[in-house]
Length: 55
Image (cartoon, rainbow, N blue to C red):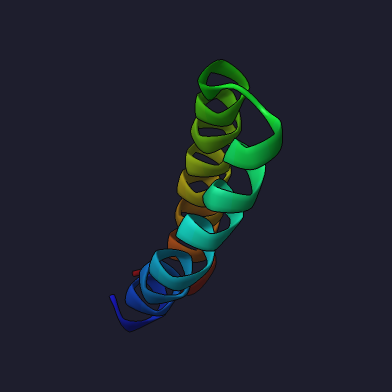
């Protein structure tokens, strides 16, 4: 869980800043699409880490 918690902490810091910058230039629809894609990528990455390290 330590590996996954580090990713969560990093995303809590980085994603709100990125979202604020993107919201200045895009409407809410594309912003939510980017958020969904990033969430799916994070889930896949977490799953791969769990399989690799047999957590």
